[in-house]
Structure formats: C-alpha cells, structure tokens
Length: 368
Ligand SMILES: [Zn+2]
Ligand SMILES: [Zn+2]
Image (cartoon, rainbow, N blue to C red; front, top):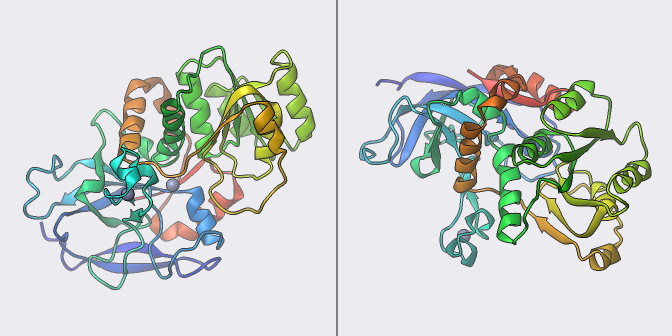
C-alpha cells in the first residue's frame, strides 16, 4: 500500500487552556514493531480535560489522547506472527509497563513503577502521530488488542478507557478477597463515563440495589443511570450531602452501604463515603484522577468501621480484554451504549473539548 505522500490531520496540544491546532502530517510507513492505523473513533477522556486545564503535566506540543480505536492499514515487515492483520479493528492501549520492576514481576503491571506511555511522542520526527486525536496513529504491536468481529468498534470506543479503569478497580478488590453479593447495597459516586460504567457493571453482576450520586441538573444523565441499573439517583444539587448520607443509611437498616465506588473526582466524595459506608465495607477509589486539593476527613471512621479502601489508577491489557469480553457477554447493552456517544471530526476538536467540559455529553469522541 502506498500511503507515503498522503497526509493526515491531527489536533496538536500546544499548552494548557490554549486552543488545539489542527495540523496536517505526512503519513509514512510504520516503523519496525509498530502498526499504522486509521481512526475509527477516539474518546476524549476526563484525564485529557485535566491536562488541558493544566492540572496534569504534559509536554507541548504533542498529540494527546489515549483512547484510539483504529483499523490496521499497514504492518511492518516481520510481523507475520503477531496475531493481527491489515483490516483488523483494534484498541491501542497506551500503557507500557517496564516488565522488570517488582510489581510487573508480580503480575501487577498496571501499577508498574516505571510506567511509560505510547502517546506524547515527538511530533517533529517520523512517524509523528502517536496520540489519540489523529486520523492516523502508530502504536507498538504489543499494545494492540483486537476487537472481536461481533462488536461494533465505535460502540467499543465509548468505554474503551473508562471500562477497563472501572474493571481494574473491581479486579483489585477481587484480588483483595472482596466478594460482592447480589444483596449488597452499592453506591456509585459520579455519573461520568467511569461511574456510568460502574453502575452498568454492578447491575450486570446482579447487584440489586445501586444508588448513584450525581450533581447538577442533567435529567438525561439521571435517566440513563436508571436505565442502566441504578435503583435511584441522588443529586447533591437538589439535596444536601447530609440528607443523601442519612437517606442511604436509612435505606440500609441504619448500617450503611456495603460497597462504594468513587467515580466523581470530587474530593468531597471521600469524606461522604466514609459516613455512609457500613462496618467492614469496601470503598473503591479510581476516580480521583487529578489534584483537586485536600479535604478534611474523619480518619477514625476508617478504624472504627474497619473499612477496606482500595485505590486504583492505571489498567493494563488484561483489563482491556476483560472489557471486550464483558461487551461480548452483554449484547443487551450495546444499543444503549451506542446512544451515549457525541461524535466530532478531528478538525472540530476545540468544539468537542468545550462540549466535553460542559458535562452535557456522556462520551465525547472524535471519528473519521
Ligand atoms: Zn482515558
Ligand atoms: Zn514495571
């Protein structure tokens, strides 16, 4: 195939709070051990919004974004046995664990202490295009996960990062011996993509009572949470924090919830969960993905309630594979998931970011 001399558009991050610059890049053959892919869909993540607001350090200029779903256009020589072929739809996972540190060696590579990423490469040096906000992307073959033919790749994009993020937290809980029972009362804090996925997952594994806590006035989002399995949506704009805490405790015979999942990123969510969780409850905290400042907590609640608090940040390839398996196992969710995407072209990146920041979109994604 001759893609040399053709160009692809990419959105270049040029610094916090600045508009992205849409530039044309030369499309070159893939370097050794990397695939060249065309964009199918690429999500804008909460992490990207934090970066754009200057809350997470990232170099500029660079192509950010890490939720690239693409179709393989070209493979380098010598990749006959890589298990992938031209035309395959794949998820490009950005995490590159070192494989050498004690965590990697212990099967915990999502929490590698020397973690590198595939995006953020030098945009002035071929093949230029490494991140998510681009019409063509180059990713190491070892970071590509084939999407089963039965799944629509654009549908897969919706939770391509939030899904594995949430699933990794549940996997760490399982590893720690936490068993979630259908009769447990669960609380999900925050209804962004990670929180929405957690609601969906808890419902799918049979949890009958799921309270979702959100804020603001977004009826569509609240209806969605109920459609996906939330028993009730509690809203911090309509009710006080104390009223919501009291309500959860009153609904659980005065004992509190068995498990809570922090997906809001709001520091205030943490002290609230310590209040509404019961003795020996589990608190999963994958949602605090930027430094939004400290907040006083009542540490004695951790002691007196003997709480089990589990943080979780990165995910790794097994979590992505589990995510794909989850979608294959739950075809009944596909139509709803498809409706959650708000789609934009790469050149509409700034509009896409504004809409992502407004909180009106459930999932913002760039598409071909
Ligand atoms: Zn992400
Ligand atoms: Zn490592």
